[in-house]
Image (cartoon, rainbow, N blue to C red):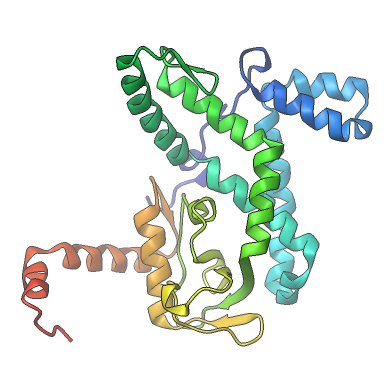
Length: 282
């Protein structure tokens, strides 16, 4: 989609609306206040409990803070070495990984299939979910609970920081990096090599430690804390963003069209026949 307002195409109003009395988010808020309650007044706690848009408000604050940090990162790449930057970056991308429409749709599909099977065995409940409930509603509740879960956040953060090294990706190839609406999906899936584009020419790259480089998406090796990307690496990262996108891809129109043409060629039966016959195309 070209020349469209991102707020209109990438956002759904009230997508995270919460009814505290009817879902498990209250349990997570109770736990949060038990641990960090000294930071809130009683009036402040009541306001949070009664705010149906508390998740939306939380993401808005995180996004505003990261917007400032990303502007700083563009000018001072070395802040990638600062713990405060990395912690806030993790909070941001871990939220991106599980907050999307695509992620909820995956949960909905999974719940629908699971509930159908459980009903056949006469099982009425699993992990606090009624199998007679709507898969769509249960998917929303599961997503909101996961977003708000302190245990999930702490456990994943521990794995994340013990597993990855962080690099500044520099793209001077003339082929811009693109970004899809599931940009952080690989964070939740713990891929070996993850590229988060910040601009068309700048990215944060995360690579799992103690991994054979042949399992990385990009074969470019770091020099210190920087990785100078080649055209092959930019293409590899872009094609992954394109394929994993649920609804939208954002970036340079020419580059996206180039990817679409190449994908059509690769899917052409003629190419597949040549590939199957092991003919050298290059």
